[in-house]
Length: 318
Image (cartoon, rainbow, N blue to C red; front, side, top):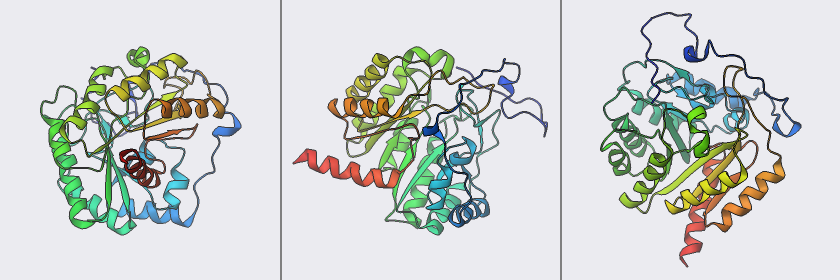
């Protein structure tokens, strides 16, 4: 496991200290199908103000999501709890790495207030990895779910969790809080884990998703991967099979985009027709929902997708 520990307090400390001495990795120029408009709408500004006024973080900003303009214009934001600093050092991720601060006890309530202000019918809650905590932050997830339920009883809740590696009993705490959707991303194919996601274990993540269904079969499960990291097509199809063996309902596949030259390079931009092919294959393998496109991200169109997910489950039960 790769764990980053900040032993020096320095306001000029780099965002990714573990990557500073790495050689630059050049990615090919972005094709036309990747380009998005800069966010500058009134809805975007309103969402940003609500996030700021409640002292919250979003993965939309911290991870540099290309869909932030579209989503925030519609007042859809994915809240990132437990701070803005991650204890892992994944090669693909733009979230800051280091030693996180103590948990904010008021954060669950602040998230619930922001959900109410935004009038969200469906909300996505994610977090940084907190390997420094005994439960990996599981109880904080549960408290946030309960706070949203109390403030916004009709809002459906989707969570995107870390892997809780070596955190005995953590998953059970989160599942007992009964989110509507439990998402945990595999991120890439097994052969790329040592270079892309070195702090994680592929089959642990598969087992985590499988265990959610064993604990509560009513919860929808979801996972996603990025392509363009050097994977082969047959490896992507094997991931699909592994996820279906864990009874995962929803698969997302999106294009990896390099945050900085110190991060893993884009090995290839996958064309839209190849994403369409992946989507067709995934549906034949039994997923209730599949979203595969260059700009697909875990929480993009999450509310609309949740409605479709429920409809697909109802249709399959007839």
